[in-house]
Length: 96
Image (cartoon, rainbow, N blue to C red; front, top):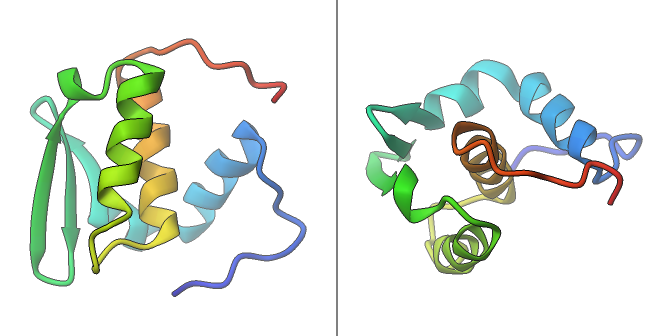
């Protein structure tokens, strides 16, 4: 698991900054392709159709399901949320 510097908090911009800081590895492991958010982690390929994570409620349900996977890391879930919100253009209160 990757250590996250303490100075990075949990705001929306912090999430985007953390995703960028981990860069290439995270981009290779969680990415959008042909209408899917794809996970390619430890020889596991898992795809989630963008239309199945196009609301806040659906994203939460997916996060709960994905969290049960043995190969998932918290950073994968963070990137999944970021990609789902951005790809589906879901309104997000950035001040939370």
